[in-house]
Each structure stands twice: as C-alpha cells, then as structure tokens.
Length: 338
Image 1 (cartoon, rainbow, N blue to C red):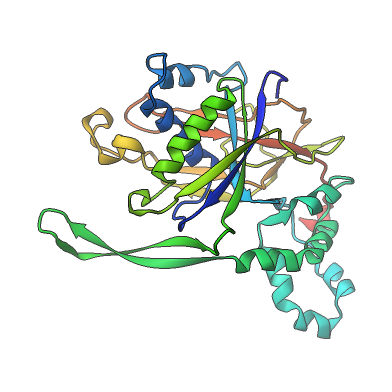
Image 2: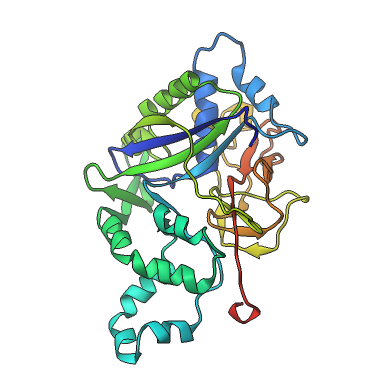
C-alpha cells in the first residue's frame, strides 16, 4: 500500500454470541451501511465512497477478516507427508497423539509469533507442521474459551402471533467465555480519517454485527490502534490473503486454497426486500477463496488483488467486496507433497 494510507488494527471485543463469521465482505457491508445512515457534512457520502473504487486505482479501503487476537490464518499448503509424522512420533506415540495430529491438521489459525518464525525462511509442509505441534497447547487453550454450537430457532408468523408450522430451523452460533471474544481486524484506508473510522465502528457496535443482531447477537466494543504489525517475508514468491476474496481475470490463480460458498443477504433496510431492490434481499451465490489461501506471484507491497464486484444483484448499484488483504510469504513445496 502507498504511504498515503492510514494503517489501523481494530480490536473488537464481543460481549454476546456471534452468529455470523467475521469476514471482510460482511465487515465492509456494515461499514457501508454505517456511512449511509450517519449524518455527514457531505451529501450521499456512501455514493462518493463507492465511486472511489475503480479498476485502475488502488482501493480507498482494504479490510481483513477478523482473527482471534494474536493469531493469523494458517497458510494453506499441501499436508505434511506421513514419513515426517513417523519421524516425530513412533507408531505407539502416533496412536497416542492421534487427536493432537488431527487437530493440528484441521485447525485454520496459527499464533502470530509462530508465523513470524516461519517467515524467516521458506514455509514448507514440514516446518509448518512442526510449528503447529509446538503451539498445540496455545491453540487448545484458545478453543476452550469459545464454543460453536448449532442452535434451534422457530420462525414466527407475525400476523397470527405464533410459530409457523414447519418453521423450525437451525444455525451455528459462537459463544465466548467472558473477556475472551477478542478479535483483530486490519484496515488500510486513504479515504477515512481515524476519527471517522471511530464514528463508523461506534455505529456498528451499537447496532451489532451480522445475523440476528436485532436479538442481541454480535454486540461488541472496540479500540482502534495505529499501525499494523504483520510479519512479511523479505523475498516473497507468493502472497497469502487475510480476507476472503475473488480474483479478477488479471490476478494469479496458481496456488493453494480453500473455498467458501457465499449466499449473501443485503443489509440495512434492503434486508426487508424493499422496492429499491426489487423485493429481493439476496445477492447471487458466490464462491470465494478463504483467508489463508496463497497464490504464487512476484508480490510487492501495494499490489492489488480482487475487486469490488458488480453484477451481484438486479439492482446494478449493489456491489460485493472481494479484495484480498495480501501479505508476502515465501513457500517451497516439492512435487511429492502435492
């Protein structure tokens, strides 16, 4: 990013269950609704802000997913070979430690300090696995401070004032131990001043984040800190995204990644399916690369990947945030690992 950008780390502390993942596109949507509803000196500040996103210039704002404080996404690379596990654990120890090994393979986060150590040399499946084994207790301690569970809900017939027949549905919600629902979001902008960001996030915190905020879900407080402390490789041969994103036709696609299917719903008063959105509160389904996905490229600080995606709704003014929040990494994977 250009030196003209302000770099911020936003510490978000949840005080109620969270029903929507803290992903960049959803955060961006909340920012946009805050800009629309707040009283600014300039008229139609949201239209002005969105007009700053073009195909030729760096975006006026980049935002990452939210990650547990002190953690980053684990780089997505091929799994470690079985012979490496056999070297670390004999047969008997491997059986005794099977749960630990399974947990390490499936977890999608890594302590930032461990990631910094990996960035000192090329990241390989072996040294990534070794670092993850070393921080197993730290990850387990974090997992014990929160719990995700499927919660059953009833759909209510507002006219009749009773539960709809066949209206039972379920959704996953995350519950936190008191004081432990703390996340970090990274944000870069040359459009908003810090005081404006405070106004925006204050508006968001008062309304709640994500699904079911009207019933108390996603209530949070926040602090905005100057600067972003992210470990970048000195000579990167790839970038890793800290946000869910969709590449443009000019972006590299050779790499390692996971995907997430997004069935986006409009926010604000658009969620009611008003005439302005043709009574349709839903965006078209999208497939996005997840945070932790990496792609080989001659990465340099400031390089832009992704876009503010159009053609996602009948209302052509509606867009979807699909930028990567990239950091440079150095990866080495043998053909045998693939």
